[in-house]
Image 1 (tube, rainbow, N blue to C red):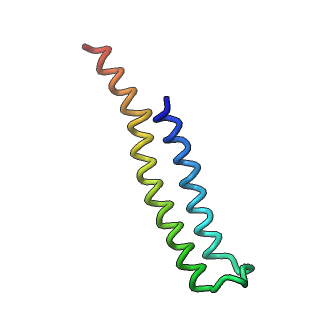
Image 2: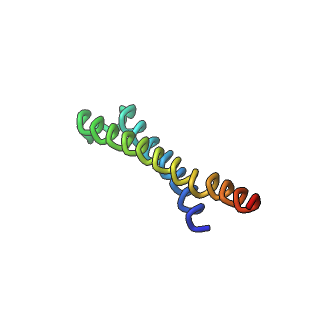
Length: 77
């Protein structure tokens, strides 16, 4: 149950990191932050978001799909 919760929470955090990264890269109203620093941090957030999305996808498969496959295999034995 806890694995399923962490996997779903990971989906929300993935969208959060990608969203913040894109916002930082595309925002023009943050004049108090240097343009290059904003792009570097935004790119880093976006890259980490995609990495986290990949890891979350693996956890979702383990938590939901493989658990169902294991149950089906047990029923056939």
